Length: 339
Ligand code: 5GP
Ligand code: MN
Image (cartoon, rainbow, N blue to C red; front, top):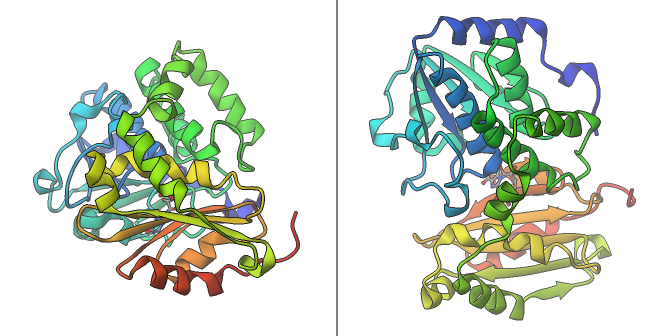
C-alpha cells in the first residue's frame, strides 16, 4: 500500500475545496454509475451535512435507468436525489464522489464538463484528475474517509444520519475491515462514527445479510456453472461464472441484487482471480474481478476500458461471455510473487 506524501491531499486543495463549498448557495453532487455503498454513502453523507446548513443540494448518478439499488435504500438523505434529467445542466459548483474518470459519471459527464468548478473527491489511484480541485487520496480506504475529513474542515456536524452514510462507505470498501486497505485510520473513523449512535448490525444486515428468495435460486444457477481454470492467471488459477438476464428473468430478480455474488465466488482457494460476469437488462455485461494480491486486476480491467482498485476492479463488455473471458485472460499475469 502506498503511504507516500505525493498521494496525500495538499493543504491548498483542502482549502480551495472548503472555500468553494463554503461560498456556494447551491451544489450539485454526483457519484459514479451503478453506485455502491461508498459512492452513494459519500455523496449523501456530505449532501446531508451541507443541506442542514441551508444550502440547496441536489445529488444524482448518471444511470440510464435511475434507481437506487435496493440494498442502499436504507441510506439517509435519499430526498436529495434527483433524476439525471432534472440535474442542473451547467452547475456553478459540482462535486463528484468515488468516480475515477469523467466517463464513470455516465449521463452526468456532460454536466461535469460544463460545471463552473468541479471538485473531485475520490480514493482511486487511477483517478485522472478531471476536475478543477482534487481531493484524491489513494491511501484512504474509502471515499467516505475523505468526505469525513472535508466535513470536519467545513466545521459541519456528523450526526447519526451523516455517520450512517459515511460508515456504509467505509464498511463496503474495506469489506467490513477485512481488506488490505484497512488502516488504523479506518478503524479510528469507525470509532468516531459509532459514537454517534449508529447501529452497525442494522447497516450490515441491510448491506449484506438480506436477499429475496429469488437470489438463492439465481445464485444456485450461477454457482452450478462456476468454472475453475488452474492454469489461468499465470498458473495461479481463475474461477469464474456468469449471471445472464435470462437467469434473473426466470426468477424475477432485479440486476442490482447480484452485485454481491462476487463475494461468494472469490473465496475459492484454488484461484488467485475471481470473475463474475453480470448481464444487465439492456444485454450489456458488467464484469466484476477480484484478486488476492498477486494479480493487479485494476490494470487488467483498465486494458479493457474499465478500472478500479488493484484487488477489486471491473469493466463493461458488449462481447459474449466466452469472448469477454478470452479478452481478459491474457491480462491476468501476476505482477510478481505472492505477497
Ligand atoms: P464491482 O466489481 O464491485 O462493481 O467494482 C469493483 C471496483 O471496480 C470498484 O472500485 C468500481 O468502482 C470499479 N469498477 C467497476 N466497474 C468499472 C468500470 O467499468 N470502470 C471503472 N473505471 N471502474 C470500475
Ligand atoms: Mn470507493
